[in-house]
Length: 97
Image (cartoon, rainbow, N blue to C red):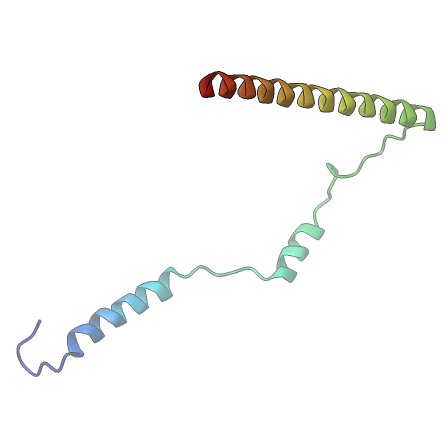
């Protein structure tokens, strides 16, 4: 700090201006929403397009198989939670008595 003409703001003002200039220089330019849309709308989105068509029978078979898989998952989850809760209850019962 300088001893000459010190009013409390001179040393802080240089640091503050330095911080402000660093923040201003490091600020990244933000891309607007419209520019993002323009950027992605011009590209051919071949990965998103699905050209294969399934028959009604195939769709029904897929629905049935997915329902079976979900039912199995649900039953296994209930069994797991039930077994864990029963073992915890038994363990707590032994610890209490």
